[in-house]
Image (cartoon, rainbow, N blue to C red; front, side):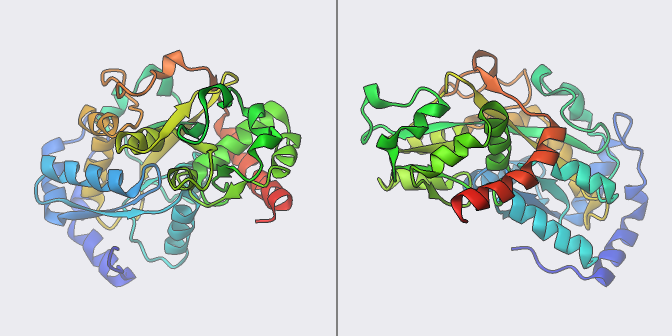
Length: 347
């Protein structure tokens, strides 16, 4: 956990690097001076929800290996919990987070309205893949991570002929008490998936699902834990975590639904009151780099650059039928989806 940074200490720290904070931003920035300023700060705190804790730690170590002496304090939680923690920091005027990486793209416009995001254009933003162009807000936040939310199955407990082929198949009574989900109030990616399924099938799909008495956790990764333990047979989950689990010998396999996997974008941005502004900007640029994309692909995540191929265990995004929702649909839809979810499932 990161240490508490008081307003007095944060102000003093910002004053010490004030000249560096005022460096030109974007493609004309002095990269050497930015790195020098980051080395003086020697650390940064990263609120991250996009990947599991192990992968986040791997990413932090990879950055430090590339920039020795600059350590990443990884604070990994679910998307909504990370956002609530950041909101508390802002409310208390107690800056702790340097870079915020969420699973709910709607968090970023809300932060912009609060003037909470720094105006910074990473050099590597120009290298985003075609599928991810225009999905951020130039100068403030950018997609650095993506994954597919799809169906996950325990292949030891479900025979091939019984595997669901699409989302409506999960409504079959044979799955009663055997299907697992995360919660949109905690997981940003589950929130996006909920909005997408509601858009496709209406809320009546969830009303029917409730009759199957699903197991509901919090994180989008919780269903995979239940499947690994044999407590459930199928569920909703992120492709990356499913592939990672399978690589460790667990009987887990992803199913790309015929009616569409939900494409989820994970954006990141530098906080305007970042206690370590130079390290934050250096790290933000690294998150969009080919080096970071390679780390992500090696750990079964979906890279956002076309010059880095996906993990061989995953289908290229271009070959997958997708369900997409816009930032506006997510912004308006997730709060209502959380209320509807609690009304339907009682939690």
